[in-house]
Amino acid sequence: MTFRVPPCPIVSHSVHARASELVQLRKIRLAAYARRGGLCRLLAPFQPGMRLADERSATSHSRKGGAEVVVASRGPPCGRPGACYTGRLGLRGGAMDGKHSPTSRSAQIRLTREREKRRLKRRSRSYDPLRVWMLTDSAEEKPNPHFKVKGKPKGELQIDVPPVLACDSSGDWELLCSLLVRIRTAALERAYKKILLNFHDVTSMAPEAAVTIVAEIQRCNAFCKNRTEITGTYPAAHDVAWLLDDVGFHKALGVKAPPFPKMYQPRSFLQIERNHRSVAEVADRLLDCFSNVFSFAATDRRRLHVALLECMDNVFEHAYATESAAPYLFREWWLAGYADAKDGTIGFAFYDQGSGIPATIRSKKKKTMKERFVNLKSWSDAKWIERAVRKGVSRHSSARRGHGLVKLKRFVDKLGVVGSLKVVANRGVATFHSDRTTDGAALKEMLHGTLVVWQLSGVAVVVPEANEDEHVRRDGL
Amino acid sequence: MSMLEETVYNVAKMFSRFPGGRRRANGDFSGEEFREDVVLPLLQKYNRVTFDLTGSAGYSSGFLDEAFGELGSIMPLDEVTRRVKLVAVDDPDAVEIAWERIRDANRERSR
Figure 1 (tube, rainbow over the protein chains, first blue to last red):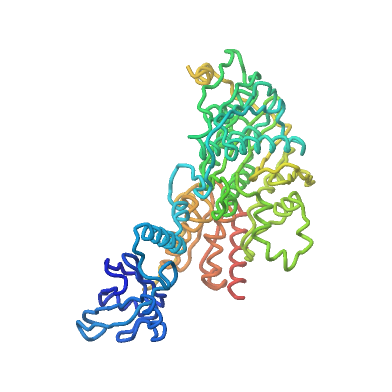
Figure 2: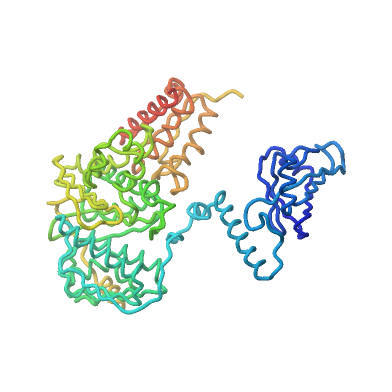
């Protein structure tokens, strides 16, 4: 409950409250804080006729420049219309303690600044603009306002992308993670004016690697588009260029897609979706796109749909910590489906740039681990991922929670063909095969986020032929 | 006010073919939205309600927990079993999971 104090000499404030406000005042136990032109709150629970501060503190504050407060009530519930209640309000805290009103202009400005700082600090306790902003329904990405890019733009940096970016062995993952770290560090921390991603020598690239690279570029653009320009060279290999274009790479860089030969037939088919909410239609739309490429059994399709939905929900609930100062695009996720006719594979990748499953579990279960599972502290990230996907882990103590991650595996477990589920997060990668075996590996480089990949291999994939229009569109003509 | 006897509510036809996640804040057709806007008003109006889960694209565990599991913490288990019936021709797992969550919630309520 606050009152705007009219500008008046600091030694004698007058606060006029209406009767209705007095009723509320009685219920509220507040500390006093009166100042010139600022906000005024009462020291003690207010009762009609009572002194607002006890005698000793009132006297003490009075000596230090305490304020006389007159609260006038009109009508009920005080019972005496027009009656005035007087009391003293002490000045507490801040620059005014034990001091008289500053006389010089500079001292007044300094004091005003300090007060404003304190006011903002107080406000943030009860009102979190970030929380409100997160709840707003907006189609735009939500960069973390706590993260600020620093430094003036300077120089250029060329980052050579490795010729082969596969996502099979732990070495492949480390290569990809180090590339992502280099891009992010250059754009967000080192403040380069221009970053050139050299894709010219890239001969092969896994679709999930393309998704993570494009996501990283989109994240960097969201934070430092005005400062750092990220651009790139076209890959010499058409397959890679086609894949990158499919995944939205050229769009993210704001450049035209490279020209493709008229007779070029793509070996892969890729669809990508990006959002920051749980939208079941998105998952369904993606699966629909693949109905021409691969025919799912109805139950398999439902299991995959549910798994994708669980991933979206996990992002909302756990991935991005709102109190973090990390360069997050809050709740953002990327979902890609791809099919490769040459390899006979079909896959779905879900990626978020949050803190990662093992880091989330560790931070949420810190207390429990300390008390009960001391040996769990030594678990590797891969082990935590495996545990979370096999048995479910929740930060809540409720038995109703923590069943989502288990559903990711169910699709692979009950699949009729050979398949696998890979979960990469932080410094761990866990692979769950359809024959119920599991591989885990530790990574030297860290993936900031979680990447979930479902892959079906040895299937007959029919990649839709690129027609004339498709070539024209990609040529940007 | 006396309650009506019984009704059948088809989620896919009357709510959405694409049920969403757990929380209302995380998108449309969430479990929270379904419980608050559909399940509880129906249970206030009808003595017995059959929720037909057939025909939807799939239900996340968050949706099922929030939509039906929460009933276990609102009312006693025997009342839920007496008044609520869950059916899903094409997705029996969803029914099983929903009842599991109801029982979990009820156990936590009685603690």
